Image (cartoon, rainbow, N blue to C red; front, top):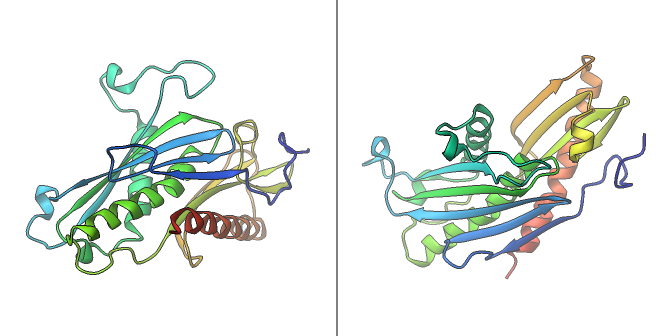
Length: 239
């Protein structure tokens, strides 16, 4: 089965990262993975949660949300519903965990960076786009802190990027769009550091179980994709 957009099985969608998308945030990025567009905004609070006070360590956390018309039909705002859905909680925690993997909390000092990831348009891979763009917004927020001498050295000890992989018609594919994601036999999200180490792997066989050889193929595909995304991040952050 050919891919909807004609890509090779191992080819990313067109990826674009635009920094300084907002005027007021300490770091902001519009990240685009094909038709998926996510706005990542970093806010610096020069304090930490109560449970971390006095530790000398900083904190990074994230919140994720989808705008009502980010999909084909309107979705009610969760704030209006009065409760946050399980998927939203899960993705928010994933993004936060992923971004904390690239930070030395002691070097941050007692500062908090909050990354708000708002999906403007969804076409698959919103969580992986949020992590990839969120890292660039976080890097800018850290630079903001360093410029005000609020850090003890350089808190950024690595970079992180994320990509989806899946199996369709028995074939591994990189960076699934929505029309592929909904029919995939296996769907997996992989978060890697810039040097190729794994931060998190989320994978599910939707139909037939997959064997170890196929798992290795998927992970190799994801690592290669994350390496490409790391290069895009580096280019976006270049002076």
